[in-house]
Length: 114
Length: 117
Image 1: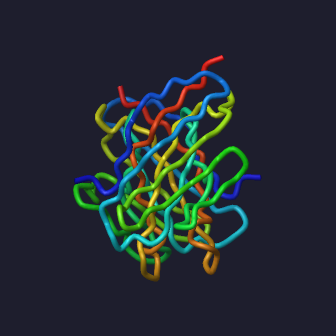
Image 2 (image 1 turned 45 degrees about the horizontal axis):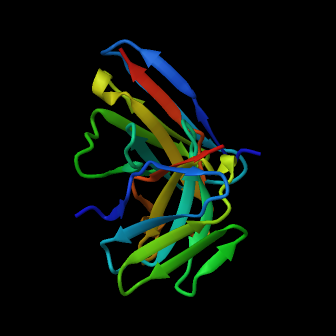
């Protein structure tokens, strides 16, 4: 089983639609969770952290379910500029350099269509 | 502005040549640099972790004699792909962090796209 699994998509949605991405992780000892965005041929960029209580940043809502080892990202009112690949990312517990090692999912590609 | 620079941004080379990729932290000391590789439609896979002044730690399946990593200073880490072959064609990205900063604050280089003919 892969450490971080995502539906690769692609998700093709019209502008204004709501779209949800899911992710599961295998290491129950994982401590921190994030969604990154990666545009084509670019480096990944942090979109938002994910907390058990759920967190929202504008049109983006992230949720973590530790019991199910499941992470979600909801995008409301999709914009053309949201077209990108969304990466589910996990950090382990611990200290030292190893605790900074990000584990990436394969990513879910989103295309927002006019 | 950019916190981590990476050069070159793209390179095309013949099979059998060696390619050096440099990552520099621009305004802080990077004691650790992570090197990732990303094949098309795949996730970023950690190749190795370099630490200033010591040997790099390689992930399982990554040949240390083929992917030479040098982290001789606190602001520069290099990855050399020796005797590159077409299967090494990929997107290589480095990342690092500031000591004491939140772990989610990591800085990525812009990546190097390598095409081996």
